[in-house]
Image 1 (cartoon, helix red, strand yellow):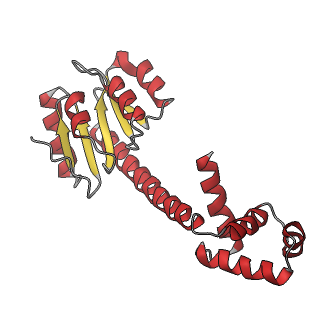
Image 2 (image 1 turned 90 degrees about the vertical axis):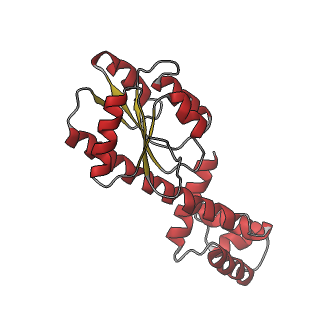
Length: 210
């Protein structure tokens, strides 16, 4: 089947050089309602890949040319966020375990149970959806942070470390009333419904930047 490299909805991207297994997996996944795009080689997938691919990658470890593990390394170098499930033979398990330490999500050993494969794919897609939602939220929080004035950011930084309004006023050499105004503007610009939400969102962004 000719890959369409779609990005608009969650897709299971399947990369396996075994045509019979590839066709069987496409049929299995599509019969369960998954959208599937199959590739006969790691090189073909790498050529088609774009940063906005949405879904998960079902990837054979051993293939002619570029192996699944090598593709994983190439994708990591490109900051690919697709979660990967490796398809392994018995002798490939140690390599798959090593790949898990480098960010792969899971692996399944041939011959595998269809139910187990479907469970892994479902779980993987759910995790990817959650991660994508978090990335969107973080991007929005980061955008809002960049809209703060220098003084508002100074007030925010002191709020984050737990300073009270009077303490913030003393540190910045401004009145408590001015602190209250800046604080209200920070809450509004950050679209935070509570102080706890504000702190959690900003800390998450700062930890990500570091």
